[in-house]
Image 1: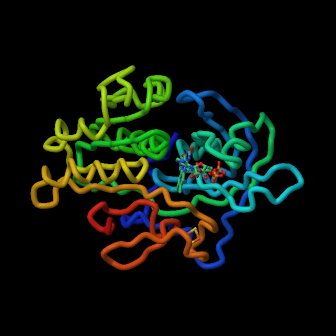
Image 2: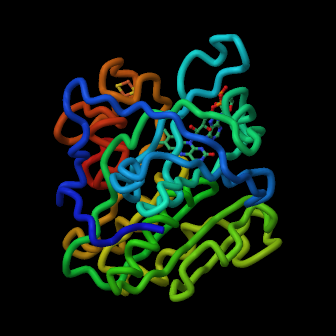
Length: 281
Ligand SMILES: Cc1cc2nc3c(=O)[nH]c(=O)nc-3n(C[C@H](O)[C@H](O)[C@H](O)COP(=O)(O)OP(=O)(O)OC[C@H]3O[C@@H](n4cnc5c(N)ncnc54)[C@H](O)[C@@H]3O)c2cc1C
Ligand code: FES
């Protein structure tokens, strides 16, 4: 659903992150469907301008409060899974973990949602990159599905690796563009390769011009251990999306800081996407 003709700042920074810029809008649920086992794909009607500014890697802070309470107090961050600039539709993949995400996964058609975004920076495909390796763990698949669509629209070749606990928790291939080579691994061996998705990386490192990843931090540690010894002269470069707990999403609370070689940075404004080599692990 992405409009590939809209350029982003080549740094991936969010031009809409000006001081005092209001990013809050009222969305309305237009569809919910089961996806990846216990998760839900939520489709939300939003102003088309919001969808136009939404690129792979950016996220939204959604208010998930139970009726007539302030609980949970803080918004919950969700990456964009898809955005259609024509219709204004946004899609989010929601896995229920705790109170906020359980509330969100139980919305119904027509329910209003208070949303802040799009926030944060984007993944950045280099202009000369042709072969892109995407590595997803669990719900980390969401921003990479959007990136795969952007990449295919630019004529890139994409290998998409997804790791999950069991076959039920995998993404059905219909959600990826047809031209993508999709390879999966499961912890229990119920589908695809038996083991961690990072075990497959050595097969693709020489082929890849760039690597993009999204998943839990243990996956990044394993990615680093597997990839670093195989890289030659820092190639291929790797971008990762850091999923830190976030309170404000606007760079104000400093609760989401990540240590980088350029000092402490906010995951919500300067991230969530960082060059893996910049992060101090
Ligand atoms: C930039 C960003 C993008 C994100 N995109 C997505 C997305 O596309 N889809 C999605 O489902 N989630 C995504 N998340 C994670 C999502 O924000 C959390 O799952 C959500 O905030 C949990 O809120 P809660 O109130 O349900 O759980 P809480 O009450 O905050 O936590 C309940 C319990 O679940 C654990 N928990 C919470 N989140 C996770 C997690 N992600 N993994 C493992 N355990 C967890 C907590 O440690 C705690 O023990 C993203 C997070 C960030 C920072
Ligand atoms: S969440 Fe408040 S500064 Fe990032």
